[in-house]
Image (cartoon, rainbow, N blue to C red; front, side, top):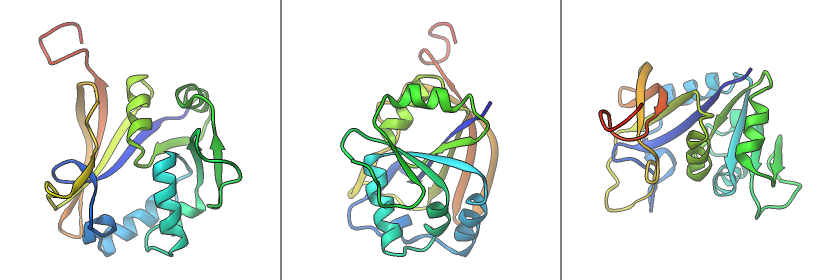
Length: 190
């Protein structure tokens, strides 16, 4: 049986993007790109929604550094607005229910991960399908220009740290095992 990892990059104040800031908030570095390349050698199936697909496929078309490894991976996009065939290499479109599709995929042997895709990730977490939660925290605060607050609309979640590391002396990679809670500790069965 496979596992599912939710995978985010974010600013310190919890945003997935910010108006006017470059990709990776301009804080990417050689260790980060080496880590991305190494991570890309894993046999992941990368899951995403239409908004993330549009953004990342545009980065791939523009030859943005760090996207080559992702282009080579198998990707599945869940969308009712996109139409097949999708232009980004190794990408399949699924128009049906994402939660049920991922539930079936988890019965297979290939490891799954999301990329961005806030709504998709929220749905998969609520459905109890997420085994691992990874965030890369970039050392910027984008309070005035930040958009796409990552954790808005999430249930309460307890995170147990599995691994951590620092890249380029500034960005933090944090791996957690998530447990969805019924509410704050002490307010009911957990």
